[in-house]
Length: 265
Image (cartoon, rainbow, N blue to C red; front, side):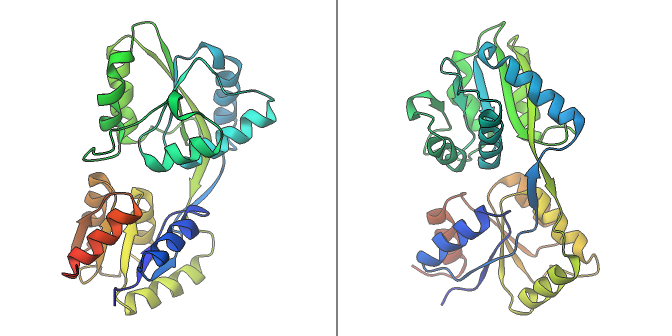
């Protein structure tokens, strides 16, 4: 019997992942440690409005996540705009690609990391797209944020690579991330899961941080985290998890990581 796995992703992704993991034989529990909503800040809305007005001038649109796709589609529909047919669409991994396909973007228009890439991230994406980048092009990175915060480390790295090639990079913040709203109920759920010695699955560094801040007095030395990227694994170790396992961000990869942890075939 495999141990209980806590899926910490925001909704609706958490429920979808939990259902898929359950179907693969992994007992799973949803405990979203981050909430997602549309960007409300004036700076974010101004940046997005400007990007939509210039949509046809971009050579490529980079989507950082499935949430970036979903909230961007909402804004396209509100503005009565169509996908820019001439632009390449860049994605850091299979989850974002799936969201793009669901939005109607043809696979032939999408660039993504190789299927056998060691990691699904900006660095692996760059290996696939760097030959198509030209001086004078414009690229739009669609992401979360309030229009004033810095991009994630991976996006900073990609921006630097593009700018070194003479590319103008713009940002369109379409969603915001927040800690879970109901603090008291969250603490009860976390305490119960700690008592069960559940495994914790993290696909966002912010979810690790929110868990850590929920009760700074808790020790995580006796607990195990699975992280879908080395940067997230680093955060989990900093939070005090005694065991941290790097796992691919796929259901099959997560199942294999859990089985290897417990010496199961």
